[in-house]
Image 1 (cartoon, chains in turn green, red):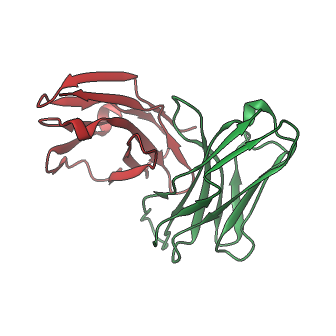
Image 2 (cartoon, one colour; image 1 turned 180 degrees about the vertical axis):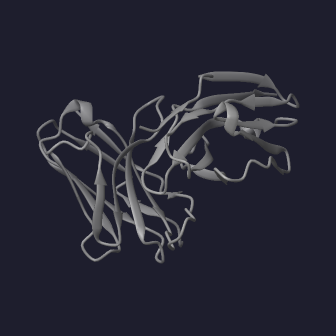
Length: 117
Length: 112
């Protein structure tokens, strides 16, 4: 399978626990994005990387959230001290930005659903 | 700031009807890109189309067609002769080449 893969697909945790999600993008893609989607809403941008550099973070990304892409390949999104409001689907997407004015489309994974009890 | 509005929250049609999903966007950039994505019940967002701000030519792909009008900042999506398999949530999105901003989505139900 050469698509975007996310792990785990589902995570149930108790409030206050830490959780970590992993995303493996399409191998030749240099950009990786994290989005959050709640029921009935569109994806909300959290952060994105070009290679290993984190280029932008949304103000939605509080200090309890941290994302890394240490070798420019896979990425992790960690949420510390989870709150019930963190319950959502966390989506990862990747794209190939080859320079110039062209912008490739995002390819999405199936998402990691987080439930905080 | 960039913004995407999809005023239609939910639409229901009977199979074989045509249906148009509206998308209105806001941006200060002169170069930008617009997208439509489909999210079926299985959940994974699927890319449908991309247009750049310099190309206002309408596009048709099978039963799908897109109408991009810069003058009204709209990028509408029409499905002709809808089918039950078209039932999904459809998202319009906008990017300046950095972050992608998505609209709230339109849930389309095609009834047999």
